[in-house]
Image (cartoon, rainbow, N blue to C red; front, side, top):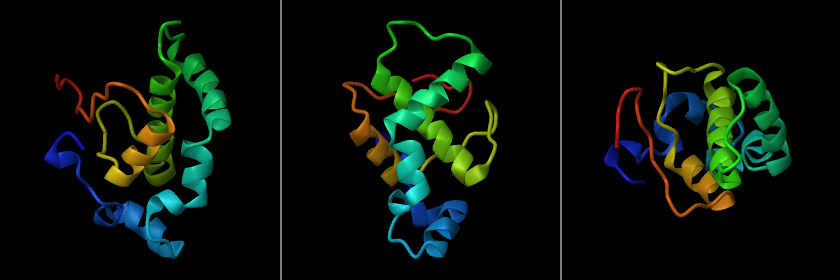
Length: 119
């Protein structure tokens, strides 16, 4: 990860660790719900339609992998914390970010930012 604050193990985040332990897994990225909801491009394509309905259209020049990463991060947050928002953000486990980045690669990543924080 780009910064120290982003280096979080899934076992170090209590809400995530509960799902790992409940599923008797070694990592949250092994959880069926993570694989189906965050790494499946068909699911993310449908999630994109919902996102556009709620937030308006995105530019045609938006790279699809960047869009799918954004949606996958949102879906993971919903899977773990149910509801977050603009001023209620959480740092995702490094393993989750890495798995999503491998599935939807890019040349550039912006990393985690709190609202109003610039890189």
